[in-house]
Length: 370
Image 1 (cartoon, rainbow, N blue to C red):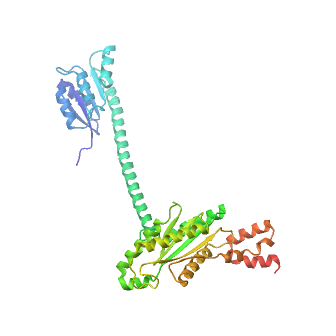
Image 2: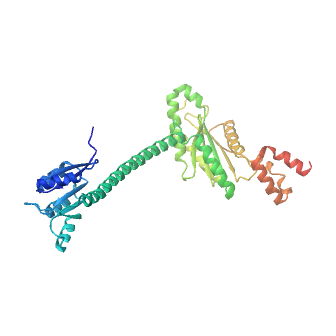
Image 3: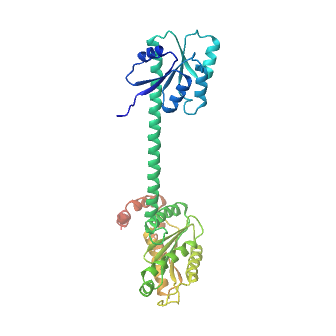
């Protein structure tokens, strides 16, 4: 079993006095180690950790002041408290010399056990508190390290969950989060919001002809090319599913969205990926649908995405490898009745609509007496 008692070093050239001091300090939690010379004391300090040194001032060859100065010069021993023991009266020079050498206290001979024990106990308590603080600091450092590692793991997992596993670009889950924020911002600021939906033309034929591994390579190249076409930090390109991709462009009207969509279409053509089974060209191409809106409280985000989706299918129907602009006529039809209603009443209806969209028409019919 390890000895966990606290070490105290007593340095005195008088062996009888060493025994007296040992008897005075017979404490359960202490281990008393003695030295009869300065060199012996310094050697012991290199081997053991001490909570306190009781040091006689008048030691031949190397006196207590010299031993203390050497202790202060060593990184290992400079913080050990020293109590000087002296038979001389405490003249002013001795006091200054002792404290200058590093003493924290003095004890005069003949020593009274009660005084010795009380002074030693103070430094033992301080030593134990220091040890406890070091242990707590190590535990805290360990916990901080664990938290940082956990945070790093969480960030990695969050990154994985936010990105498409194949292409490395944001996935549909991330897109759903971004469009939710983009929709709220556009509604609040009454700024245009645009969507671009893109689909690789005849991709099933590409997979069947070249194999799924090359099909995966194609998806990766298309994804990287589409991402390179957006320039602003708030824009987002995500893999929507299969060979479909979607781009969210905040604060972008239809003219800006059409320019980006055309840039995307040309970028895929420039990849010049061979596609012998394509019904459009000898290379991989994409079709794109575009939608734009300045959302109002009664508008539906799902309808907005549907407009882009319908525009994409229209582009495919019109021959593929083109950009088609969708129309938002359904948004306008939803709001045809609003000018007939007073503004204050309309505000109330908007709040009802947001909370109970499915029942709003029934409520309007009852209120208007329809």
